[in-house]
Image 1 (spheres, rainbow, N blue to C red):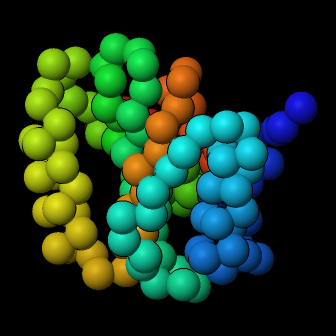
Image 2: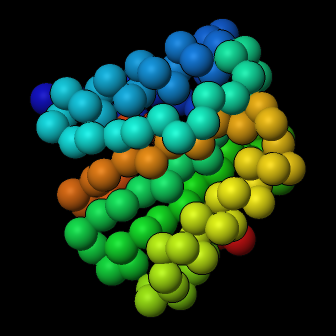
Image 3: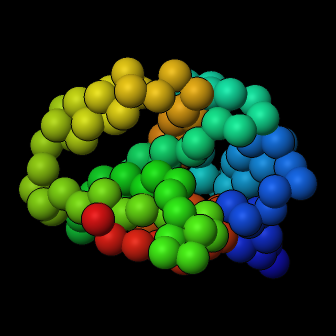
Length: 123
């Protein structure tokens, strides 16, 4: 059984490239696909994930953030359940234009989860 929480966003020992690609490999081994839309900074790039699932809402966007104590976590960017995908993609494009070091990954997930650990905050 694959532990989908083994690739922590709090692991400061790993470069962005290493832990992102390791998490994505784990995701692929579980039979789910992903696409790296944009590669960011290899050492300190922030990760934005667009999750496409069979659940409602169909699209979910998570971005690395820091909680009130300074620990890395996931910011859940809330969209209405019926938000068109083009509006979600426009949001992601704006984020990418503001942060050239940003990694953008789109992944399919049967249950709406992703292979990276960390608590999720709602924006």
